[in-house]
Length: 225
Image (cartoon, rainbow, N blue to C red; front, top):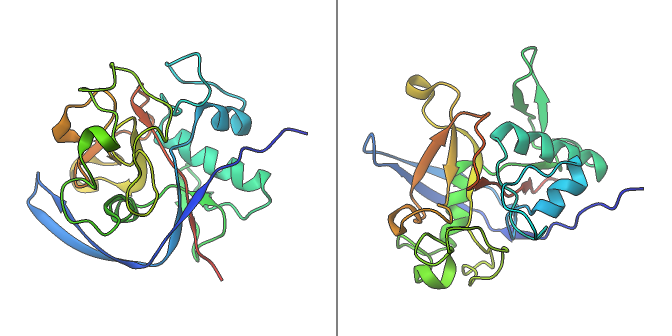
């Protein structure tokens, strides 16, 4: 029997976050229920244990964050891990094979929403980052232009590591469907990004099948019952 990966989850309290899109100058507030978020991004070893695949460009250390994974890959990982742990999967699929989030929330793994991601990243702080950038993140100025094992930088006040830098992280949300169609949200900045991209508020977008060597993800679970 295959060994299931151990994924540490950090509890995130309820609260509210205000998101801002610099492109449109729009701001909006979101109320959030409590949830759990991966303490670290998913690693290459964890991804391989669930899927049997090793898609990452960086080689030689299974503890590196998985990258070169699409939004759709991340959704399928969440459902597979839920099934392996005998949890109720968070996602169904429509007639065209597009993922749909189950309602009400299940106990399975899922991607965080964009609001959940930023709220958890900030962890009660109000500045662009939750600490000095070199102390908390791998970015272009200190990464040697490669990803690093998660957890090597200081965590935010809630104990979450690598929320900024190392790899961009897929979120569940559509970015702006009226303009960009099915493009999904990416957050956090990566190992190849300049310092201005590694901020709690920065939004990036890409097609749900897009794969590149500085994009990964972390998992979330709803607090049910």
